[in-house]
Each structure stands twice: as structure tokens, then as C-alpha cells.
Amino acid sequence: MTDRPRMTLTGAVLDAPDAAELARFYRRLLGWTVTQEEPDWVKLTPPDGGAGLAFQSEPAYARPVWPSGPDTQQMMIHLDIEVAELDTAVAYAVELGAVLHDVQPQDDVRVCLDPAGHPFCVWTPTPA
Image (cartoon, rainbow, N blue to C red; front, side):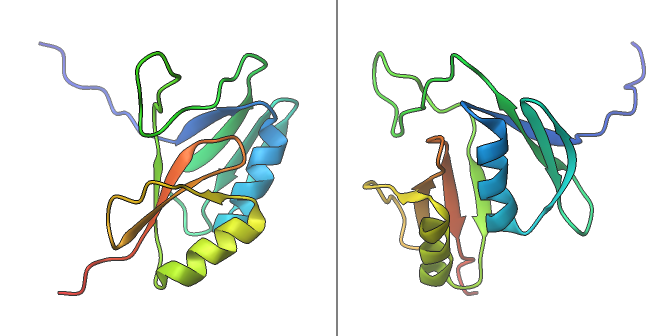
């Protein structure tokens, strides 16, 4: 058996109708830096290093539906964003263009949709 080669996850990519627009939303939400910008492609990286988040324009993009249902474009990925204060963080995300989803499955998590419709969860750790 061949030894596993070294592999490093450098980021995740979200498709959107307009990569630059969605990147602006996440840049403001997370406070990350644009490290690569091309037509139809933008990459953000966190200030303390680690995997980044990129955005790719997709002309045939279809907004995902969550919770999923039959014959709908299902969510393929979602982001989990830890925060210190849930209500303040959700209000900030909504101010930037997110939408608070009608379905909220947990008390310490809020499901939001970004401007392109991708679900993301804003959550607080449960006190020990």
C-alpha cells in the first residue's frame, strides 16, 4: 500500500451568482482579508492563518433549500460560526444582508442564510 501523501486543506469554495458580492458579505461578517481576487473568484483568509474561504461565480447557480425536501436543490455544505453572544451576532449578520431562517432547531444555534442562500449556523458553546 502506498503511504499517504501530505495533503493540506486550504479552503472551501462556495458557488454564487456573483462571487465578489458574496465575498464582500463574508469579509465584513468574519473580518477576514481578501488574498486572491480574479474575475469570478475571490478568496478570503483568516488573520491568524488556517484554511480560507473562496467564492466562485456560477451562472447556473441554484439557491439551496434547507431543510431539504424532495425535488429541491439541497444544501451541500454549511458553515458553523462560533460567537460569544448569539443575539448580537445574528443581528449583525442580518444587518450585513443575511436572513434569519424560519426553522431554528436548537436553542444555542441560529440558522441564517447568506445573500446567495447558503445556510450558515451562528452558535454559542453550551456552558460547562
